[in-house]
Length: 197
Image 1 (cartoon, rainbow, N blue to C red):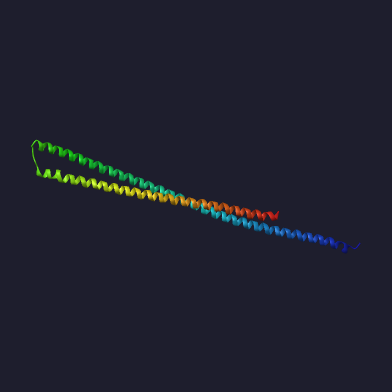
Image 2: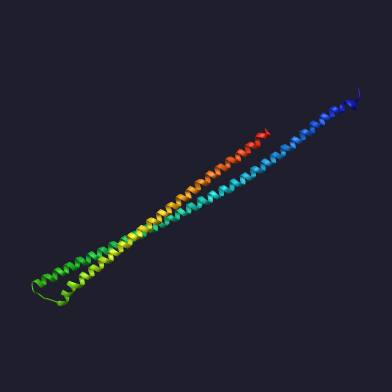
């Protein structure tokens, strides 16, 4: 029995298995390091996408608050304009009513022959109708301006709604894109795990 000769094949097998096992452990450690790097990269991308989504949500929230504030201002302005228009109409009605009353009194006095004043006659026949026509045309102009303003506000609100819909569609597309990217990363991670098993 020659010990050196008999032991050499056994030592070669043991050393070969040890080297092979060591090489496998090194490859596993490298693969684990690569997987950790991919996971870290994925976490960074996910954190960046989450931050971007939160930023977009905050921007959308601020935009909605600004829109609501402007709508409230516009409602207040329209309410104030309607109040002014009602006051103007009431004042015009009062002037017409008072003008009619004064006219009736003077007509009755003149009809009874109490007095006749050419200046009053001139005012009743010329000035009062001219004044009433001027007030009526001013009110008509205010109504036209109000209608134009209402049309402009409705167009602006429609445009704002269209922009909000576009922003919502873009947000939805971004979420879909994020989901697809997540699925791709999971698929790549799954493919990376499949050869290791």
